[in-house]
Length: 354
Ligand code: AHM
Ligand code: MG
Image (cartoon, rainbow, N blue to C red; front, side):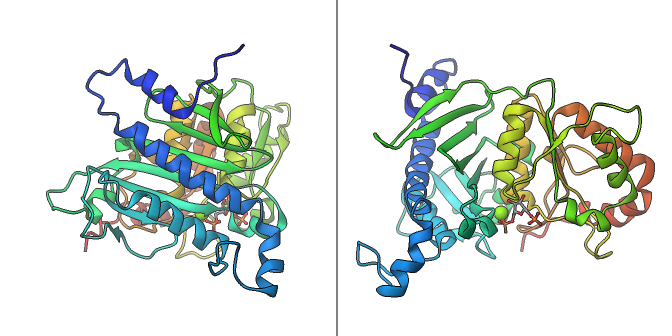
């Protein structure tokens, strides 16, 4: 019989190589696994919520029906607020940093999360995901502050995502490779299914919202043509696959090879930075990409080296096989000087700690 490895056992075994490890990550990932199992249970009932809500507005526990993204946001906070492991949290759903209630202990880490990414796909039964990232506390304050949150991705202690798709999977890294676990709904455990994921050398797909092509910069347009084998040296075209949920698009390209891009564009000259959020989406995805042998860039350089300046800062994101991402950077260098000039002052803004 094959070895059955739960997330807990996997992390414990990995930790043996690091005698100084405190085991705190085992507990954090265990808590994230619990929170996302509860979210997964709700996502499978997503289509029923309106029917049930229309008739009684309460679920089987007598609670008010909630929108799924609000439910996910509260679930992650509630599972993690009292453990003494975090000094603060930040979520895509909240304007400001979320403090740990003062009657609970404050810990050595901060948790950043996008509770339900790809939310436009919830109502149409298409894969969505949860993204999370963990930074170490660096400030001297007794509780967590923005200084603890606004750190470059390079400093991440760990990151991961959960995809709610044909099956539910958790993929995480604490800096020792990327590992994937599939939820066995029968026993309610995530079991190791994808050990040490590496981006395949040969890429199959590119993913972007081609409906935005009108707004893309000249370099990005040429790059898309290059991926299609039209521009440049006439490479074999990559297939085009786009779900519109970052987690799902990234996950497919991680396993099959490829590139996802949501670039800065020219739609609004004062917003040269695309759609993705640096702290809640891009940092975690970039960390996982690098750990799997891939690369993530904003078109200028490594996402992990960007010093964030604000909590909900957006960032252009190009992520996947390293050679494909570096080619995008090359096209942007060659053809998009105007966009670079507009974007750099935003990229280099002073950190807003107040
Ligand atoms: P959200 O955080 O509001 O759900 O938006 C993020 C999502 C990503 O998951 C996805 O890659 C992107 O938005 C899709 O955007 P678009 O619909 O413009 O293609
Ligand atoms: Mg999101």
